[in-house]
Length: 141
Image 1 (cartoon, rainbow, N blue to C red):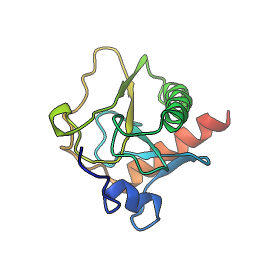
Image 2 (cartoon, helix red, strand yellow; image 1 turned 90 degrees about the horizontal axis):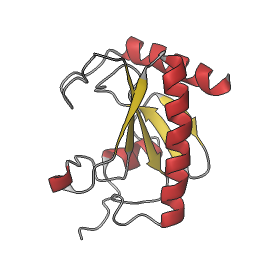
Image 3 (cartoon, rainbow, N blue to C red; image 1 turned 180 degrees about the vertical axis):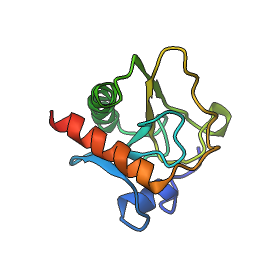
Image 4 (spheres, one colour; image 1 turned 90 degrees about the vertical axis):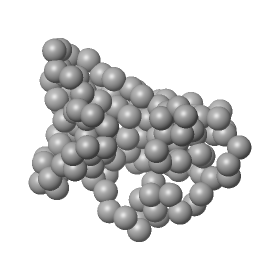
């Protein structure tokens, strides 16, 4: 298996080298908005531990990512009055992974509305800021 690259974009976000719209952080996970969302409120949850994907993450770190993903899914459903939630995790290039730091996508869904194609539309910063505000408020409610 290929080694973890500490220069991947999510590692740089964790180190504060690249800005993001942070939603949630605890001792083991970090959650922020996808800048090319497939639905309004599309959020990513990543471990703070260096893990390329599900194939190499420590099981306890993966469990914490799952707990945070559930917390974010509940908040996203509430914040966006969603009918449902889509969670996705891709491992390795053949599995669809594009950034090689484990991450889980949380996408609020409205019945009858298709997801946008992946990595096609960079959202405006002001829209992302509004979505972050809604998600953070839903986490506190």
